[in-house]
Structures are given as structure tokens and as C-alpha cells.
Length: 510
Length: 72
Image 1 (cartoon, helix red, strand yellow):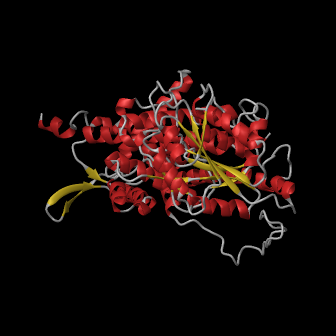
Image 2 (cartoon, chains in turn purple, yellow; image 1 turned 45 degrees about the horizontal axis):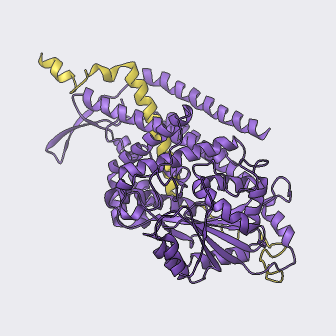
């Protein structure tokens, strides 16, 4: 019923939009075009300008429709979250906060414990520093387990030197998710209501205070199922590093503006309450996709995104507090970025396809449709500018479109303000980020086409030859282990990505 | 000769800009750009948070803490 409603709603929006578009088209055709005026810049340089702008009703219609669509999708997401928040139904929403609270009311279940599980596959370069920083947290983890998954280097030795427990995966052919499933299966069944498990990558650097804040959130709210880390890009990496950092900065801003509402519980570092993992494992194969008994779905390319949707489906309350920050590695080359993003993109699409269209996945679908449309919008914009530049004999300035361009620049700069001057300067120049968006668009199309033609999924591993020291989690095909899944991306960025598409029109429309 | 030169762009004839195709493309891009400008402004404005005096005195019916005797 609800599903049909959403479908009809989207259809209605599309029809209304198309109708207004057509109406505008027919009126524009007969509209009088004002000839450009010649003027002089600084009294010396001749220039042409035109005050031509779209008709007011078209502007109002476009603004109304876009904001309505945005509000509808945000509204649907909030409605879904509120349904979970208010539910007492342990059959349909077994992880709803009230259901968890009903189970623990009036009885102290023990203090919050944090067991950190670090899957590692040949991580000798980074595992030492990761564990050192983890153990230096102001709130120490109660237990740290490194899962050595088919390691042939010194990972195990380095971990043991730090005094943490090391468990080796057994005949694991299912990469990171498989290794995690093996170990979590032995841990979660005996765990209590306030025992939590943090899954983090071997190259994740936790910001000081992460565990302390997480402990406080889980202590203060027994209905809380999971906390996702907020990731920001590491320093350095040059130009391509800055571009990625700006993306992450915008994501953090989005999450803050969403008041912590989670898009994705990042694989770099997220903490789960034991009952949440128990419910996911027991309901796979029935209420949610996957194999019964497995915490992670090994069929998912982006298993952190998948488990986020799984938890949301079961009604779980989750958050990304501002204090829970993690530093994430950046892809040092365009080639590695391509592989990483292609995997994220495919993973995101496959995840929502596995869940279908329902109230929980509506927002994720809308994001994917949003990017699809933004690809179309950006590329038609490029085509227009290209044709106009190479078909006109004079350059005409359109103050209206210059103003619109200024709005885009402002939005770009403000949204990365916390990233510092380099980030703001890059945003202000607009073109580099536009080209970066175009690069991501091409990856999006490639991912969509791959799925459409059912091409084999690539795990997006960088060849060892490509690697720069930092990226030790993305390993070669021979090792076949996707250790880094800070997936989030598609979603989140999409939002900023999609909205930020068109930037300036210094040159306008006829 | 001179006239033709003036009326053309670098790659395409000026008449392209007056074609129906171009008008449609320009209109489409103009609408899209307006749409994205509206969304950009929506992302620029500070998030509205209900002031505390506006929110009804919402006291929890019970504590959410893991400690049963904690403050509500």
C-alpha cells in the first residue's frame, strides 16, 4: 500500500514537472528575446550584456517543484524513522528503541562494554599505529580482537606485541565480511544487552574521545542500537586529496544538519549493541536478505552500507555523534579512486536493489535517482556552454546567470568552510570541483551500466604497484580482501554532489 | 564574405543558436540551473531548530539510561 503510494507520488511529481517544462518550452519559443546591449567595462573594454532571464513563473515553478521533491523525500525518511521510534511491535520492528527498552526496563544489565574487532589482511604497515591509537583512547576498550585473515606478513606478530588478542580466520573465502562473521558468531550469542562491538578497519585512526562519547551515548540510551563514525579525510594527498577531503567535509556538514541521522554506519569504525547484531544474524534469510546466522551479508560489495539498511529495516535507532570522528585514508591516484568509487557505487545500487523499494530505502533510491538526474543536468549544461562558445561571434554576459553562479560559489565555499583556506579556495574556483563531479558521474554511469548488463562485480582493489604506503587496506586481487569499506559515500555525498552540480553561468541562455 | 565571418562562431554557424533545438536545450538548462540554485540556497541557510520555549514540556515517561534509577 505504502509502496504504491510512494510510486504514485514520484510519478505525479514527474508528470507535473514534465507538464510545466513543456508549458515553459512553448512559451519560450514565442518569447521576445532582448538583443544584447553593448557597454564598456572600466570604460575601455567593450562587452555585451543582456538582462534576459527566465520568466518569473518558470523560476517560481522550478523552485517550488525542486524544494517540494526534496521535502517529500526528507519527510518520508523522517516518517520512517519516527515509525521506528514509536513502535512497540517486536515482530515488525524488533530493534525499535521502545522494544529494546521494554526488554531491559527496571533491570540493570551491567555496564557498557566495548569489544573492538579489527579485521586485518596483511596490514603490517598500519596495524601497529592503529592499535596504539586505539589503546590510547581516554576510555579504553574492554577487549580488542584482531582477526588475522589469511595474513602472510607480520600483522599477527605486531598485534600480539600490543597485547591484544589475535584470532585467525579459518578457510575464509568471503573476504572481510566472511572473517567478521566467523568471529562475531562466537562473540554475540553470549553477549548482554549493554555489550557493544566496534568494527573498525586496520588503518582507521580514531579521534581522541571517540570511545568515551560512544560509551556515554550507549549508557544514556538503552534504546540506541548503533553509532557510526563520522569520517574526515587525512591530511596531505595533494590536489586529489583536497578534492576528496572537501567531499568528506561536506558529508560531515550534511550529517550535522541532519542532527546525526545516519546514512551509513561506516565500515571504518562503527559500534553496535549486541542485541542489534543478534537480531540481524537471526533474521537474515527472512526479514532481511542474507544467510541466517551471519551478521554481515557476504554477497554485498559494501557490507557496511548493507548492515545499515538491515538495521534500519528492523527499526534500529542509530546516530553519528559529532564527537565520534575517524580519519579515513584518501585515494592517492585517480585510478585507485576510480576503483574505490566504482565499488561503492555498485555496492550501493546492489544493496537497495536487494531490499527493493520500501519506506526504509526510499531515501537511498531518491539519492540514486538524484545523481542520475544531476548527471543529465550537468552534461546538458556543458553541452550548452560548448555550443554557445563555439557558435557565437560575440560573448554576452547575463547578469542573472552571473548571480546564480555566485550562489553556487557561495554554497560550495560555505559547505567546506570548516576545511580551512585551501578547501575554501578550491571551492571558490568552482571548475576543478565541477570536473571532479564529472569524474564521479562517469563512475556512476559505469556502475549503473555494469549492473544493467550484469557484469561481474570488481572488488576495486588497487594493484600493489599502484599503492602508496597509506593505502594498505585496498589490496591486490591476489589477496582479494576488501579491507576498507568506508562506503557511505554514494549516499551522502550524493546529496551534496547532486545539489552542487551546476555552477556558474557566466555565459547564458538565449 | 565578411558578413559570414561575423555571423559565425569558431566551430558552428551562428544560426545554430537560433535553432529550435538550441532554444529547447537552453530552456532545459535554465530550468535545471534554477532548480539546483534553489537547492543550493536551501543548503546554505542555517537549519531551523525549534527554540526550547516552543517545544512543549516534553518530559520522558521513564529513563532511557541503562541505570533504572537514573534521572528521567
